[in-house]
Image (cartoon, rainbow over all chains, first blue to last red; front, side, top):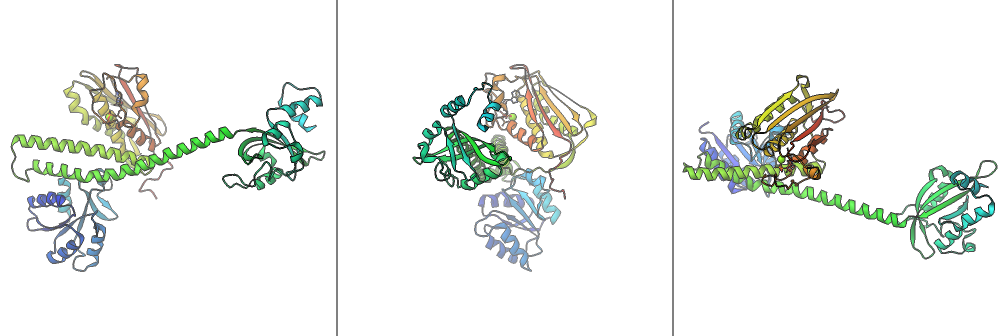
Length: 122
Length: 394
Ligand SMILES: Nc1ncnc2c1ncn2[C@@H]1O[C@H](COP(=O)(O)OP(=O)(O)OP(=O)(O)O)[C@@H](O)[C@H]1O
Ligand SMILES: [Mg+2]
């Protein structure tokens, strides 16, 4: 998976640090954005293999960013994993990690779970 | 006479002439009046005159509406229509409570017994009304309703507050748990043993707090009626067996023997596996918590009828005194005895478990012969959820 690029989007700097450093430690190249507009711009500029998107963000939330990415021809094929603290990892387990066809993970999910999901996708 | 026949039917102590009836009616401690088909008053006893504040001649021949019955009651109910309806559907009003009004404008509630009086041809001629003042009772009832509503609103407000709080609490906790985990995984570089030990305490406490928050969130969801069952088929027997492994380590440390004997005929049930697992785990974790060294914990389950299984998880622990039994299933309550004081917990495990079981249409209870005598926790669970729709059902 070396050389694979992930765009990580979260308004919480701490979460960027936590997941960013973890993904780097796993050998990914990580691009970070702390708001929706930067995320849309960086998605076009850096063309990542995967986008990990926080759901609850001020101004543009994860759902809106996801829709905008999908509407843009340059970004519509980039897979997305939604990452949220709205659901517990038990709830994720119960829904099979998918809500409405979208891939979800809880911020309290095990890191192994996150890596497993990433590997399934890229 | 109709009044007579009415009394003859209802009283054992029957007066023997019309004069005595008259006296009885006049001095009765109840409102007694009659009205004709139009609602005009044809008779009212002395008690009624005093009660409503009118002289006899002021009311005889007058319509009840506008005198002793207001056109609408305080809640806006059309009493004029009600009086008219009494003449048509008199059987519906044999026992009726409605608002009345005194001469001084004060509104009162009266419980009426309305008896139709028929003429020779069996046609309704008049209505005999006997009334008792229930204003005080009604006020008390209203107070209770208001209090009940306030309590319900408060509990709803509490539920949504808790749900919001739980989300807010999870965010910082994710950082606490996440970073201590990351440190322990060595992502931030190597740590000394002492640093590892401290980080593991942060992680452990963070996880503990998170599980409490999840319990509180679950409880508030159940209370708000928002908890749904995620139904699937699973093997209950396997689940109980697996659950025992959660407490195996602690049991071994305290030399507690584990015995579970589940008959094979139980097989597959259709229920919310995660919730049932949590119930079993909650009961078992109490069992190890409240059983002193050298005790025993066991489980058994059996089919009690075609669609129900009963599970019993028992221990030989500190037991539960009769006077404390209400506390077991009360939220945030723990029994404060010299035995149990030293045990940690929040008092959410049992109330939440009971709610989970009841969501399935089952029952949960416990039995204990008292302090030091151990406890048996029981729950029943339907094999199939009938009537309720699963998420994947059509
Ligand atoms: N097996 C048992 N033996 C004796 N007492 C019990 C047993 N199970 C429960 N209790 C009593 O009922 C109380 C409520 O139990 P519950 O599981 O709801 O709370 P808890 O175990 O104290 O805390 P929590 O489960 O939230 O961590 C306990 O504090 C204890 O006093
Ligand atoms: Mg408990």
